[in-house]
Length: 193
Image (tube, rainbow, N blue to C red; front, side, top):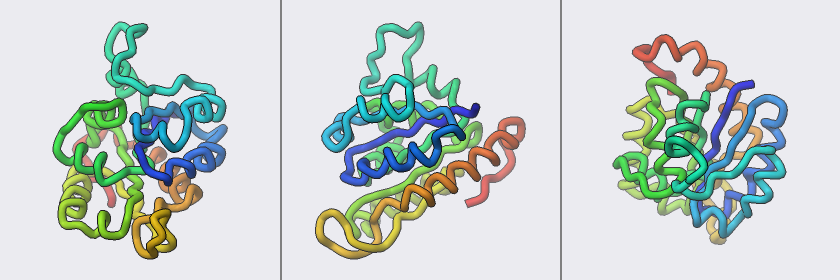
């Protein structure tokens, strides 16, 4: 079974990730990496129960011969960052690696293995020039973006910024992971956006 790592970051939309996991169950072997902020919304125990795999909550894993983010980057078939906050998108676009998710993100080369980002944030944050610049940078590297949806936001606003629905993310991941195996031996081939 192909291995997917999901990097969960600090957004209220993290509460949708258990529903995503139920859609991926039996199709992919999923491991979760979490930022400290993500743990404010969903506990690691919930993800352990849903995936059956240990949850990565720190970059300091003393039980491994090499750093866990390197082991995961070597083992995974695809990386999904969901929900992807403006913060993690900015870190990815600028090479910042200071937590389990950003460190993992910079350990996976998008021309070798599929990287998928599903943003979730307030409309102003999504439309901000810095965020749009960072998203375009990620796209230019071949990173797949599952665009946020429009609707009611947790902050009380309405607009673009909602995490795409779990079924839309699952469909994108399964399609891209299928593509990803064909590309492992053809890293120079351009990715579809």
